[in-house]
Image (cartoon, rainbow, N blue to C red):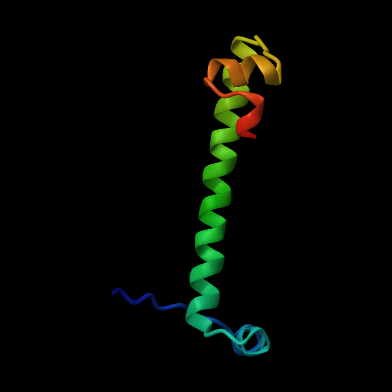
Amino acid sequence: MGTVALRLNDRDEELIKEYAKAKDISVSKLFRDAVLSHIEDDIDLDLYRTAMEAHRNDPHAISFDEMMRDLGADEHQL
């Protein structure tokens, strides 16, 4: 398992420690969860931008029913 060092001013450090304490989690868990959530948000945003660009290039749309048929699903599987 790796370790990452982070420099904080005293005010930020105290705020972070108090927040973690109020949430009853370690500072390590707080940072890990926050960073991973941020990375996931960025990945989701990149996927959205890619999908929107593809849609702009080929704006073909299908209905929900068509999509379900294309996926081989029926209304009873919902």
